[in-house]
Image (cartoon, rainbow over all chains, first blue to last red; front, top):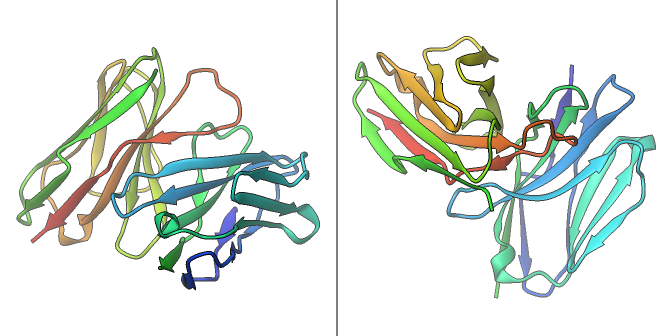
Length: 115
Length: 114
């Protein structure tokens, strides 16, 4: 069975601080996909990134960066120099490579950025 | 470009009443379609998915059903709502024959059963 754990329920930071969201997953598959989605207060989930299990290169996109470590089954997400617009719930998700769009989501981490 | 819409955005329904949530995708053909539910304070759970017209797969036993009467239309229904059906329902789509399993979500529908 697959499982995604986001142990941090809520993180509060002051604007311009960095914030790191932890994601730990469990799977017996040798190949899989990992995702991060952002859910702003409006509710719609916004796709941020997909990572293949065979690609352990870290990725940076603007103020966002992701650290994938297969050895520790973690896929952590860092927001650098946070802004108020980053306030949202962030979900980590996992899927098998042959499971179409059937994603196993974590419980989410609420990020609150205050001015 | 592709877009996905679902409605109504919010609704309050009494226990025992029927439900119909509709989702449509534009700008693509033969998408894979999904219904997810997000209960209050919890992660998302896949309810149904469809790879084609009339093809519905259910992931969890429940009080809900899904139908796909047209290629780009996906409907979530219930004959009699339960209090436990309250939550945030999200429709999602995936390009056909795509790799990577990325899915794209609609705006969501807030359902409160009273």
